[in-house]
Image 1 (cartoon, rainbow, N blue to C red):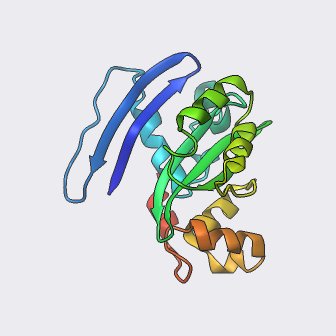
Image 2: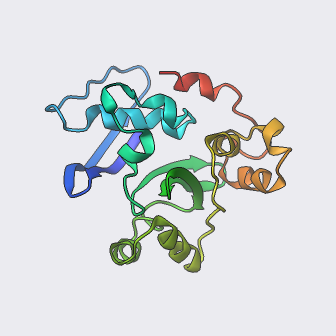
Length: 196
């Protein structure tokens, strides 16, 4: 099942949509309709990113299109937040820009109580970077992971990839909290579901 809650997509001051709440359940067919430029493809492109599709493979660079980071994360304040359920409870995966590269962090807690709480939104309006927002969330007592600089390590944490995690004990500790499958299990073939 894939669900969205209060989904919003904006590029700079241009809001494509807000407060979208949808649940896609197995065994049903769905259509996503809207005017050209409404954000249908942009939204659907983000789903495989959460599960580990490499962002550089997502964007068609023909016709001088921007790369993933420049398109989806154009500013130091830009972020993509995925809320998901783990055996440990609700967590968030936050994708953001740090200079010219995409970075990842995990937060233990729901999006509504961490990133999208009233105080976090007000804080983010006044500060220039996602990093400062994440530090503020951490100061409120929520566990925020260290910065992860590449998609392979992000996917290793999310899927509890033992082979990769055995090389880095800090990542292994993160996987025990933030893995989709829980501490003792691996999601070995989730990458196959992200092939587009």
